[in-house]
Image 1 (spheres, rainbow, N blue to C red):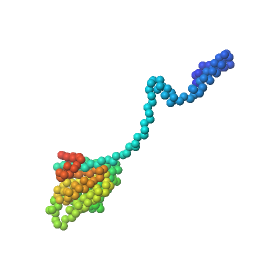
Image 2: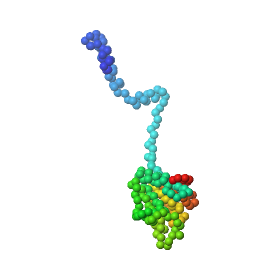
Image 3: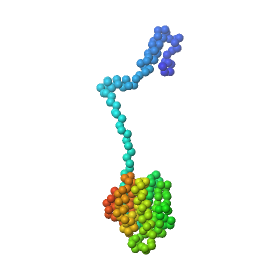
Image 4: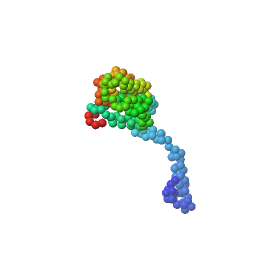
Length: 230
């Protein structure tokens, strides 16, 4: 019994004998089994019967959901001028920083100690490839000197990209100026198209450049044209 209820009674030696029996009956009734133990299910069932409702049947366990592999896209970024597409490069860096395996290949931009064996690693999981040529390539391959190593250097970068696409060990690949490399005669268009058709379904492949063959534009899931600035 609560302290307030007990305090409302006088001491037993001051209460007439007739009232003591009433107190004992009251205390016994408050501690009866029906008050100490109430089945919530029975109470709920009785309340449902009283208002005419009925409980719903148990629903059978549903099948476990399975994760769906992400669907990759073939994206094209084109612009009227040559240059590095900062939006694409920042996207690649961000993806690598979040754990994706990324490869960036620049076919017509060389440098010191470049080539497949001179790749640069950034953000842990990003590989950066350039051909083993001293500078940028802008002349058609047919006009270069016979002893020029530029065509073979560009082809070596493409073979690395091709092997990685077929190996399905990347999440994203950026092929910078691949369209211009085709137009200048450094890469074979049919080989590029065939390889891209065999890319894994979960891999994002991004093509950039000021020139893009119509067949690659038709294959693309997304085409972005940058009209000014990069």
